[in-house]
Every structure is written in structure tokens, then in C-alpha cells.
Image (cartoon, rainbow, N blue to C red; front, side, top):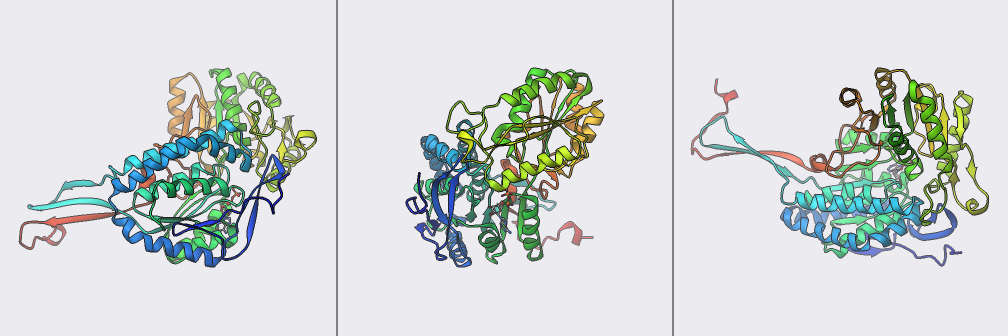
Length: 500
Ligand code: ADP
């Protein structure tokens, strides 16, 4: 058994150096599958540490901004190459720090690799527009400009992928940054930042401060030298960040909750739909913002679907994600497990039918972790809390529906709008769903999870504040437009509005 005193003490990364926090305070990172195992001791940074990181980023901005974008991109290419080489090591460390199964942590690192290559490619694009001027002998174009120091606050469920979604576009656009990873998963961000440094990023361009939300995270968010804040996490924290940023007109992007749905129509390939609902509902122990926590099934196939789905859910092997036969890991921490358990009670009280699961796993091999059974509620009405609120755990609510129209009404009848999916072999139904589902992401004959890095990622309503991550959408967030007019007529030419 590792003890906190014997475990490695990790540091902050400020101005190109690994430094212990001025605060002298630390946070312990433990394996949620076995809480006896201490992954490491990480900084709990103070305002002073955040100030040091922001001033390093501010100083580095002057030359990074002027480094040609293709040169900035070369460092990202090198970063991706190193990540490819170290993928297995980082994946195993990620499973130990946050519990999801190895196949999924490999996917998490792969997503960071994909995003890094993609954004490296942007170094030779970052396209603006050229357009005819309304006047003779005048040239008009728009170019992108970087903004400055970006503050990044990230969650624990994709501890390398999500930081990469924010860092890589910010960097290729010429910004510098300070990132504050989640308390539960600082190691994966530490690994990513280490690779960027190894790839040759100049000192101060990327800075990492470990810490908590209300102290370290809030200090970064409100810092006057941080004009851009990119956040992924809970809706309640997102609201606080908006309240900090809005009065001083910072740019802020919020990526928050979801209550995603799979619609299974009467003509669906049911084998495929069951596979998709199992993967979408229980992948990452249901702890994805895109998790399929609701499945609405047409009444003609409801019983058949329920029987097959529940049988599969009940058989999922739960355990330590490093065991290759395990299909579902633990919840991230005790608090998240308690939230799941409280929703089981809520579902029972509001009359949802518990079809499988419903309990914590705490004996034998589960004694030292935050494990919960895969759980399915049947016969849910769309307004029940288990069908409305984000649970962020291995709980799926099944809702019977009569028609596609009703399915879409149910799908759209929640405060969130991240991801939705439909299983149907009818092309008219597929296109109608694509048109009418009010979400940021729609899948046809695939579950609600599985976003690719070159398409925009994000959601409508309370999922976000109108921005998108990944793809060119991320470039839009991390740059500002500058319109440039070049008059080569050698005389004063007035624009049309001043010429009447
Ligand atoms: P989750 O429920 O997924 O842990 P949180 O919103 O609590 O969601 O956490 C997401 C990230 O936001 C974490 O890095 C956390 O430390 C940070 N955070 C929490 N509270 C604040 C805050 N008041 N200001 C800035 N960051 C915060």
C-alpha cells in the first residue's frame, strides 16, 4: 500500500520550470478503484502561484504571438509524435487516477493526439477572407488575431482530451495560457504539459497550476490579465464563471451538462440499438457529458428492447479498469457515488421501475473503491427527475413513446441540449430527427457519444453559452477578427456610407 508520504510530489509548471507551490499546500490524488493507492501529491496553489503563472504567460505572449503560426504548429506536431509514443503509459496512469477502463483511457489519449495533429494543421491555415472592396484601388481582407493569456479550467472525466481541446487551438492561434486541471485528475494534465515542454515550447507559453475550484480556479478566472476563460464542468460552476467574466467583458466559453437521449424507433435494428445504448449509457461509468442517460423506445418494440438491454446491463463486468476483462470502472469519488445513490432513491420515490442494479458495490474486490452497479429504470415519465437531471453515473432511464413526434418532444423537453441520437432504418425519420432535435450534436444509428475532433463540439440551452469546442469553431473562440483595408489609390476615398 502506497502512503501519501512515500508518494511522488508533483509540481506546478511556471515559466518553463517545475516549481513547488508557494502555498506549501497539496492535494492527494487517489485511485477511485482502490483508495489505498495514492497516485501522487499535487499542488494546491494559492493566489500568489496563480499570479506567477499569469505573469509568465503574459511575458511570453509578446514573442509567441509574433512566432509564425506554422512554426508554432511544428511544436504541436512534435507534441503529437511524443504522445503517440507514450500513449500506453499515459493511458495506464489515467486509468489509475480516474478509473475508466484502459480501452477508454487509450481513447482519451488518442483524442489528445488527434486534436494536436488537427490543430498543428491549422498552423498553415488559420484562414481569413479576402473580398472585393466597394471602392477602386482598395484591397480588403479579414485576418485572425490572437487575444492574450487564456485561463483554462477542466474537469476530471476526460483528463487529457479536454485540456487538449482547449490548449492546442489556443496555442496555434498565438495565445499563451494557464491551465488548472480538476482536483481528481491532475496527473494526466501534468503529463500533457510535460510533453509540450519536451517538444520545445518556449518558457511561459503554457503554465500549469494545480489546485481546487473556489481557491485556485476562481483566482485564475478573475485575474485581470486573463482576458479569455475556457471552462468545462458543472452548470453551477459555469454560472459562477459567467458572473465573474461578464461584468469585465472577458471572453468566456462554457461547456456544461447534458441529459442526452437515444430514440429507438419501431423499425430500428434492435441489436445495434442495444449495443449503442449500453455503450452510450455505461461507457465511462455514465460519467460523460454526452452519456445516453435517457433511452426513449417506441411502444411496439419497448418490451423487446427492455428485456435485451436490461440483460446486457446486468451482465456488465464492473471492476478495476486495468483488468482487460472489466467493462465498467468506479465512480470518480465518494461524492459522485453519493449523488448516484441519491438519484436511485429519487427514482424509486417518483415511481420509476428499478429493472436492474440500484446498489453500491462494496464487498470483496469492491471494498476499497467507489463502485456502483449498472442501473436501469423502466417506465419513466419524461418529467421525472431521473429523466430530467444530469446524474453523471451508471443510471439509464427508459421512456416509452408512441411516435417520432413524441420522441422529439421528449428529447427536447430538458434544460440541456448536448447530444441526441436516433436508431431507425427509415431515411425520412432520420432526416426529420436531424432537423428537429435541438442539440449541438446528433447521431443516426450510433450512440450519443463518439465526437470527432474536426467537427464542432458543444450544446444548446443550458449546456453552453453558444460557443463550440474543437474544429474551426475552437479557432473562432481563441481568435478575434481584424478587418483590414488597404487603399492604394493615393487619394482620399470615402466609403459608400459617407459618399451620399
Ligand atoms: P464536476 O462536478 O465535474 O467536478 P465542477 O464544475 O465542480 O464539476 O469542476 C470542474 C472544474 O471547475 C474543476 O477543475 C474545478 O476545480 C473547477 N471549479 C470548481 N469551482 C470553481 C470556481 N468557483 N471557480 C473556478 N473553477 C472552479
